[in-house]
Length: 458
Ligand code: ADP
Ligand code: MG
Image 1 (spheres, rainbow, N blue to C red):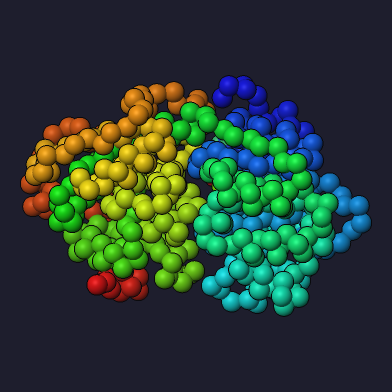
Image 2: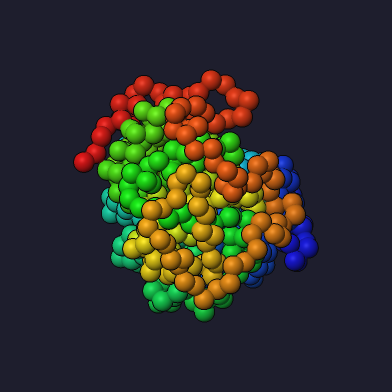
């Protein structure tokens, strides 16, 4: 990275540095560099950088570092509060805490979110708890029951604040903030710092410093963005089967616009021999956690997801993101494609669009400042003449400028330009179902899940 510094210069606790070096983090990302310096000065910070740029460590490292220092007056109550919009994200943050605080066993944490029983969470709150990660709903719930005391909070972090607003958490967040001391330090992270996020945060923060990162990684230049024109749903299905069976697809997430359609698509892909599962808001927390674990372990090759459920998924083996349906909310496009190309790896995002979607495609391109490459796979040409989506931007080179040391290189960058061999995968759609090169026999989803997965919508 440009700053060319290591983590050493931040005066972090040696045990944090040890964990970072074990995690393979050689240098801070840009948002980490800028944020960690300012947090140490005790300032309120509003930071925006796109997904996959390491925002979690940008707040966790200074937070954990603060927890290595003794309190003015000892208490068992939480000193750092991190709010996340979804359960998945809360769990994701918790696992990063485990990674960074590996050698700091005296720092105790709790992670509370809805959809699961209370007793375990209550138990972790009744003991010493220095760092509390929570989703707003469950936290309010416990606040009202008098089970959480936020009077000792020194640092209040709002992660994915834009999403928090989209999900209607303004009131709960204000209520939670009101239960913390006024003299706390407040940090806010968001993919964007626009309009409502700024207004909303002005009430919560004292003279915040804005950190806006437009780095190369933030521009997703490590993610190849392709656009496939399609005629209809049948065309989409055929093309998806074909592309999923390509050699270079290790793990893929397919985004659909509705939960029902996600379930239906899972059923269809399953019948064609793909190891697949759905991830959406109608599933219990246990099912969602298990599904993500199966994706991570390689048991599931194709995850079919809706936007909210896929937030915060951080699985490095995801090589491809398919926008089977384009997102209705343009910012979701950035969150979706950010599920691949994690930690500087290369990834491919493929969007399916019809001629009617041209306005939406243009809006997405204007928002990202990048043009998608229109790709036609031989044998899957759209029948209608497609006008390429107009854009003000010139296409940018892709796959350039990967940051050195920012992640493991992908062995096989996505490319669908070679002749597709139409018919090969149609005749034998399950030909390559589990997709792990040199891997074990195809992983069918476990029985219990299959029942749930194969439930047909409509
Ligand atoms: P964001 O919140 O900005 O979407 P995350 O905090 O989830 O991004 O980080 C994305 C990925 O980058 C994670 O897998 C994380 O472990 C990794 N990562 C974060 N910081 C570094 C770093 N300095 N060096 C290498 N990898 C990093
Ligand atoms: Mg994040």
